[in-house]
Every structure is written in structure tokens, then in C-alpha cells.
Image (cartoon, rainbow, N blue to C red; front, side, top):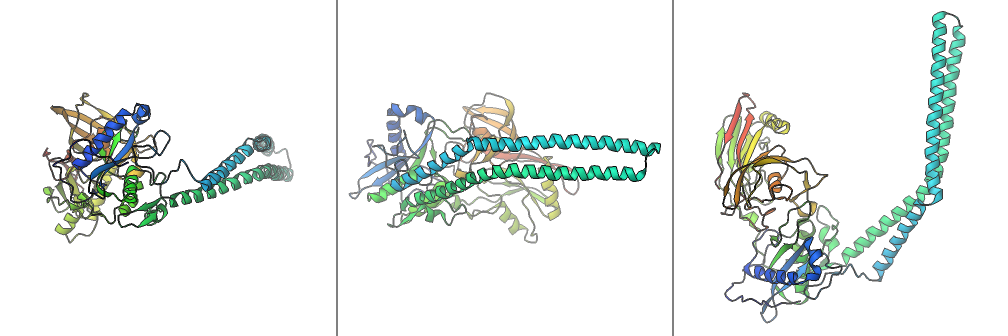
Amino acid sequence: MFHYFTNSIEGIALPEKFTWPFHYVPHPLSRLAADEVMQYIASRTDWHDELALGKMFGVLVVSDNEGELGFLAAFSGNLAGSNYHEYFVPSVYDMLKPDEFFKREEAEISTINLKIKKIECSEEYISAKAELAAVKAKIDVERTNFKQECALRKAERDLQRQNGTADETSLILASQRDNAELQRLKRHHKQLIADAENRLTAIETQIIELREERHSRSAALQTALFKQFRMLNAKGEASDLIELFAPTPQRIPPAGAGECAAPKLLQYAYLHHLKPIAMAEFWWGASPRGEVRHHGHYYPACNSKCKPILTFMMQGLEVEPNPLMEIVPPEPDILFEDEHLVVINKPCGMLSVEGKSGVKSAERWFAERYPEYDGPAIVHRLDQSTSGILVLAKSKDVHKELQAQFISRSVKKSYVALLQAKVESKSGRISLPMKLDYDNRPRQMISTDGKSAVTDYEVIGYEGEYTRVRFYPLTGRTHQLRLHAAHREGLNAPIVGDDIYGTGERADALADKRLCLHAERLEFNHPITGERIAIECKAEF
């Protein structure tokens, strides 16, 4: 599993610290290792069809006891129906080859499934459901007919009252008899339904009990399975997935936890006394339908499945600091201000609202500048990496009125962006519903069950193979412009410097390789004077 570099690594300095896997630029040694793994993958023509659908791979640069450098390789999940392939490190626990306990439990669960299926397909169950439906249909007909007869008799009584041809006492008694008969019919019908439902319930109770047993066994089996993943760290400590995820908001490990490339690589290194030097993960093949992944590009480890695991596994290593926590954005420029509101040019790298990273936010800037105001100031948001126009309110009433304008979409806004490819269509509309990719927060994905997301665009011009566009978002979903630009059903052209939907490499928010997305124009009604305000701010890329 330990591979020596076939290409020369002479002159390449080792990294001072291990890779922070959730936001990184691949070290040159990681790139060389990934290149060799890509060559190997390309040579495996027997895997071509499967890998064409897309898979994440990882490399870990390591040194052995003699100080010799080499690398390990891994894939996420399984490959060609197996967790074991000679070139790659094995899984932490091979779920494709469970021990006798798991086989017995899976057999029991399968038996329960067969019992449920047998009952659901039984003549007794089908007959009981049909009988209940027939009883309800018959009751509907009988009750409708009786009510129609009652209506005719009432009409006849009303006519007799008009003509004065009947005794009122007799008419009242006749009406009371109809009402009494209706109540008797309802009680009879209620009993018929209860009898039919009881026969069906007796059978469905068996199904419910079997389903509850199946759920209980499945949960116990899943817990036992997660306990088999005994993850190691550089201190020589071990902890299973149940323990690692217990402090997290989800508490229970998600499906597939421990099967990604990064945990496999570190586990193998610790088991074989190899020192981790640097790590990287890359995507091979087509992008999943709703997501944006680029063949051959590098990606961070996922937050949902891997962050609790890797945070533990890296203990004992000297790890690079999270670069997002070291960003020091410049002060924003004020574009417009009066006693009611202030409009700023939020710099790239500044958060809109205060977050856990400690990076300065527009919200904190406002609080420091206007300490006398303690109400909500942020009316709308821009991504940390997006620069441009941001409106902040100086009173609660102004905040409420401005937010109402954003909600009603009476605010007009436009963004300018530089895209990594040539967009042939000069203008158009992108309508792709979006939702959160729960396994890879904060990434968003395209999904038919997502919320509506609509963006109009027009091409401003071309700069070589790059395209400068203007976006007019008609909705305000998180990462809407970034995902609509990058997705193959959108413009299929990621925004330059996009470290989430673009090349997968980190875009240092304060370097030349920033995200080239800027909120350049905002138009709204002044919440006090009613005057239409238009603010413009030119992009600096």
C-alpha cells in the first residue's frame, strides 16, 4: 500500500505542518501523488464505466521509520463491489464482509421483511381492506339516499304548511321521526365501519409490530456497526464513531461515516507507523446530477461525515491553522449614509453577520461604529467571499421596512462576475431549484424538491477564455449565483476563484485569486422619505 514516488521530488520542501483538510491548497507533494494515482486509475480500463459516474479519491504523503517519503491512496465508499484493491488502503471496517453477528442480524431483518410482505400480499389482508372500502362506499350510498328522501318529505311538509292542509303537530312528529331514523342509521353505519376496521386493524397490528421490531433491530445493528469503526489518532488513542458523533448536533453518525478516503488514509498510516505529511482529495469522473464536481480537481473533506472523525484523528499532529480564521478583511467603504441607514461596500473576506470563525463581520463593524444602537442592523447578506453593496439599518423600524422590501422583491439588485469559461448565450434566465447539501455544508445543490431559485443574466464581454457577466437574481438563495453559474444545467462556467463550486482549490479571500463576484448595484425605496435610492459600486477585478 506504501508507494514510492516515481517522479523526482528532489528540491520540494516538506510542509511545516499537516494539511488542514477542510480548506487547503494541495502541497506539491500531494499533487505529485495525486498525479500518479490518476495515472493508475486511467490505466484500469475495467473500472472505466463505474468511475465515469464519479468518485472521490484521496492521497496521503507519509514517511516511514527510515524517513523515506512515499504516499498512500484511497477511494471513498467501495469500488467494483469491493473494499479491497491492492493499490489502495483497505477500509477501516469492511461492511461488505460482516462477521457472523451482522450476518445473523441481517438475516433476521430480511426474515421480518418477508413476513411483512407475506401479510401485505395475503388474501385475508387484501380482503379486509376491500371489505372496509366496500362498507364505506355502501354507507355513502345509503346515507345519501336517505337524506334525499328526507329532503323530499320536508319539501312536502313545507308545501302543506303553505297550503294550510295539515296539522302542525303531525308535521313536527314526522320531522322528528326522520331525524331519529337518521341517527339510528348513523349508529348502524358506525358499527359496520368499526367491525370492518377491527378486522383490518387486527392484521395491521401484526405489520406494525413487525415494523417496530425491524426498526429496533436495524438501529441496534447500525449502532453495533458504527462501534466497529475504531478510529485512531496520532497520540495512539482510539474512539468509535458513536463516541465521536455524540457531541455533534446530529449525535448519530450519518450513513457512510468512516468510509471516506481521508479517514481510511490516516487509519492505515497510524496502524503501520507511518508519519502523515500532507493530504489531498480529488474528484474523478462526472459530477453528480445535483452537485458541482470537476474531474481532476481537489476538494476539502466533508463536514457532515468527516469533520468529527478527522478532528479526532489529527490530534497529536501539528496541523495548519484554518485559513478562514486568519482572514483580516479591510475596513468597508461607506457609499451612502444618513440618520436612518448606512450603505457600505463590504470587502471580500468580511462576513455579513458574526460567525464562529472570529473573522470580522459587517455586523461587528456596525456595532463598533454605532454603539448607541442595539437593534438588528443587517437587512440582507452577502457571502463572505462576495464583495459589494450591503445595507445596514440604524433603527428597528427602518430595519423592518427595508426587510419587507427585500421580502416583497421590490429591491432591484445586480452583480458582476468573471466566469472561468466562455458563455456563448448572450442573455437568458436560469431557473434551477436549490436546497442545502446536508453532507457538505455549506454547499448547496440543485434538486427538484428544493426552493425556487431564478437568475437573469447578460454577458458584458469576453476576456480571453473568460466571460464577464451581470447577474440579476430574482430570488435570494444561499450561493444562488455561484451554483447557477457553475452547474452544467446553468451556465456551466464557475465564477473565477470559487473554492466551493469552481476548481475546488482554496481561493484566498484577500489575494489575487479572490472570488470574482461583486454586488455592484442596489435600488430600493428610502424607508423614511420614500425616495427611490440607487447605489452603484464598481468591481475591482
